[in-house]
Image 1 (tube, rainbow, N blue to C red):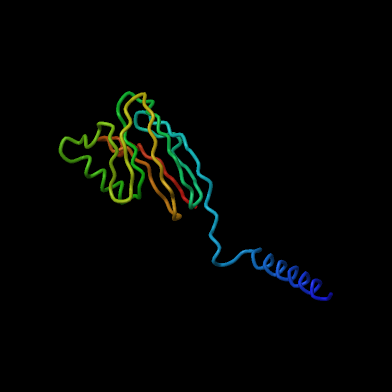
Image 2: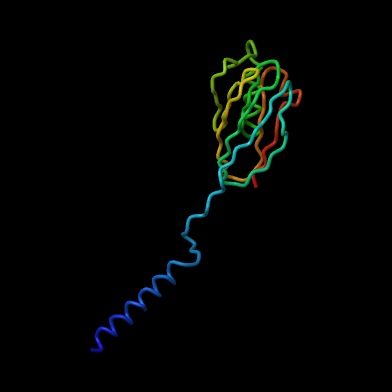
Length: 153
């Protein structure tokens, strides 16, 4: 009756081999993503609070903007170049752009308008390290410093 013992030994050996192959890290294993987070940002007349933020790369962030000011404000999340392009766009014509509370965006950036006393959210996943900005491009606000820096590490 050596066969049952031999089969049992083989089964144990296979189980141990399979367990060893499945443990540890592999170059092909998926990297864990950073946990999603929500960040509250207060908008006042010509400022964002907080004005500097740091998030890990790969983090899905829900920005919850609350307009505590007396006029509509905009929140555009993007690179410096996207901020400059949008600032130029908003300063053309009547300078009001889309101040109706509708969402809008430029390229890979996201933007929206928040009316006084209202709260709205934008969701952004930061896949790459770098520096991003949140800006309000209501005429004169960005130039007056209504921006926040998001550092993705």
